[in-house]
Length: 248
View 1 (spheres, rainbow, N blue to C red):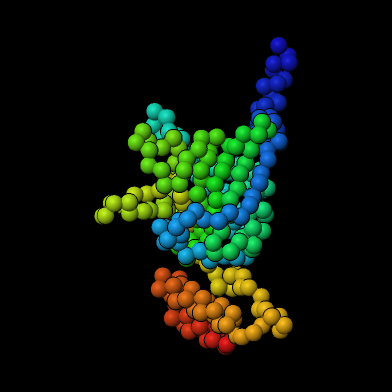
View 2 (tube, helix red, strand yellow):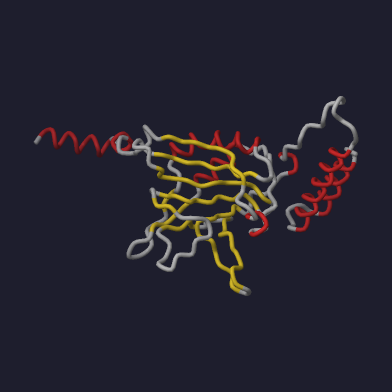
């Protein structure tokens, strides 16, 4: 009886230590890699990918921490975090590094396995002019493909929070559908200062000034889109445009 009482008191006064032992995070395996987009995927979803990119660690950490989902039962469950704290802490620097290596034709894929080697979480992320994208294809070992509209209903769905929205697609004319395992962080837009541009070729390999010119054209195009989306005002636009032209 005393053992039971002391155990209850321990749980009451030290709940974090007790619950921490129940979290399946000690032996998880996490992998991150760069993978190409599926054929015509960028065209079908009108994705203008802006990579490589130097993200701020805090920005990525907060984004992952705020990604939520619901599981289907008799009704939808309460909102739950997609990534727990341990996974977020381990995964953030890995994704951060891969964003600096990715090119516009690649997405950063991630996979989390439990101690038994079973995939519990899986998905990908990438940055476009729309914002930062997160797509989940497995949560709690239940898998879904991107853009799957099940007749029987989704087993789980991501939940857009503040400054987040579902990616949409017009599958049939005048019928726009929300992709419930694809979230866009609308406020995390590309910052021109954080875009990593290819290093100019060495003097031995540089035959013509075509490469830097193409880089400048791309920067001007991104700047135009930021102005069109009202992410920068007219004054900022003119200053940044002149700065880009000065590099010619």
